Length: 162
Image 1 (tube, helix red, strand yellow):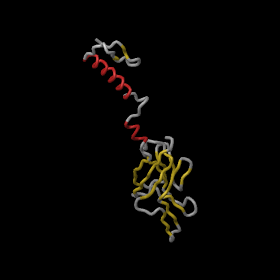
Image 2 (cartoon, helix red, strand yellow):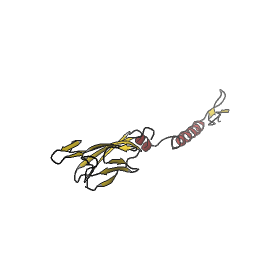
Image 3 (tube, helix red, strand yellow):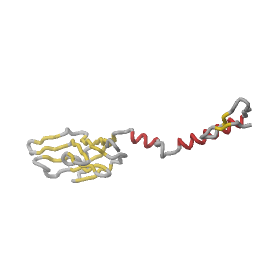
Image 4 (cartoon, helix red, strand yellow):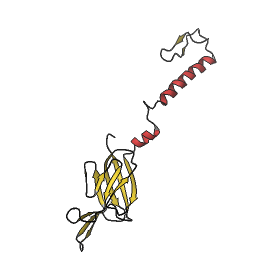
């Protein structure tokens, strides 16, 4: 015999002293609980997926590329979030290299933001825009972010609300 009373929401058995519970009653209640909890846990409108949690918990994204010498180039980063700012640098070069004999200042380190950046850099909707100056950009300054054969690294930082 099932219980005299049922719970108000899930209609589980709620016995009184004179009820005689049976194994089927417990199995029935367990089945209801299992279905309710399982459907709640699988509901992605109220729970985030593992992939979403992993993405949100990572405030940075980093990778590298090799320069190919073209004057401008877009590096498609595959970054999973909206970029607040980026730091880019050449592996085997100092941040700035002065060539006093040729009166040149080569820049191998820079910072980019959506609203403005250092010489030769920019953030695009799908990555980074880098420049390799053939002529001086301003004064004697050359942007060197796509020099042939040079390895570059970048670190992208997520927007605070993204």
